[in-house]
Length: 168
Image 1 (cartoon, rainbow, N blue to C red):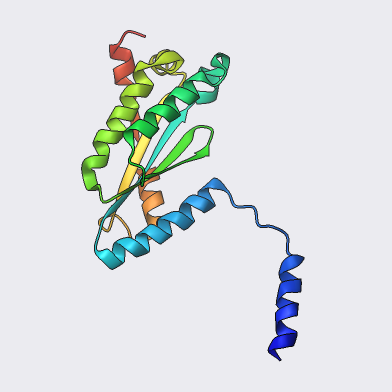
Image 2: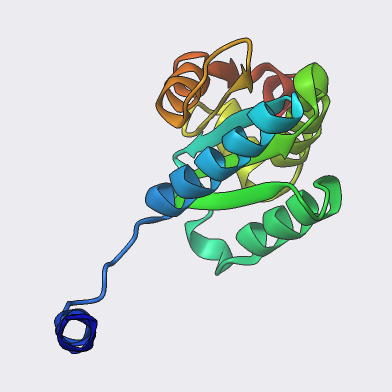
């Protein structure tokens, strides 16, 4: 029986179309893995989102220079085991392991970089772009990816005052 079943299984998998997974799907899978680990070892984690509404229009003429600088900056501020993913052209998602509320400092430094550097600072001050962020902690704010992601998305905060103060 096993000899007949194995070729059938291999044959059915060979004809299956490869599954295309979205960035959000990849992020969800990884968050669920880390949630299981956090439960086992009684650890916390933070899921955060940063959205730069209007980013594409604000940096249209810089040929990706700002994007490159932003990604380099994020890499210097995150630890090698933190997870950063770009969900779409305007939204980044982060998973910080065992950081709790310290995540606000990291989000603050990212928002400072965005509001002080390049073409986006002027766009923020002129209300042509918005910087929105939110975060949720496990276990306090939720027990699943869906709960944490929804909470992080719903807790969105708006940042524009820093750009206005700079006189852009």
